[in-house]
Image (cartoon, rainbow, N blue to C red; front, side):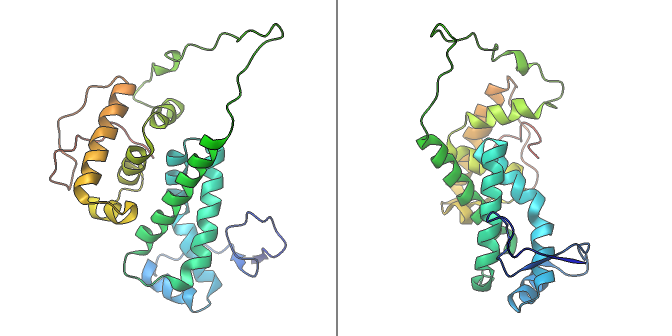
Length: 228
């Protein structure tokens, strides 16, 4: 069964003339095969490719953007750009690395848009600021299961550190892929992740772990928590 997207919302992640199939994702084709088919005009392949990567793209966008609303907007914008630019994808990097670069840039754009918005201050009928909830109240976390607290902690990180930490700990990319996405040296990637994890652990009142990151011989501290 196919559902036409023409005439749908302008925020649709697919071009107007693309049909979204509801068929399940095939596990028999890798990304390269789906990319080749999609570039050849196979709309089902494009649909399967986007569905396969949607969860991680959305998680990356939400964590970098720092809010669900901005993350949703960034994710939709990223999917639109991926679909539109796929014919020009040359395969010099993996599809995932290329897609996460687009998602990262879309998320950082949302952060910059938000930073340009005027800040509104809440006041009561008498013109006084109401008492806010104690910000430390939600830091009592059992096994870091409270994702709202984690989102708030991530939002305190500088953009550059947040992006590097999210790409490593959410997208599970290696340092070389992150360096390619952010267009910085690998050494800079490692230092940003190290600073970001240390700040995140401090914000969450954790003791930094001394164990090494699996699969990478670096001095970067172990991931303080599961960010997915």
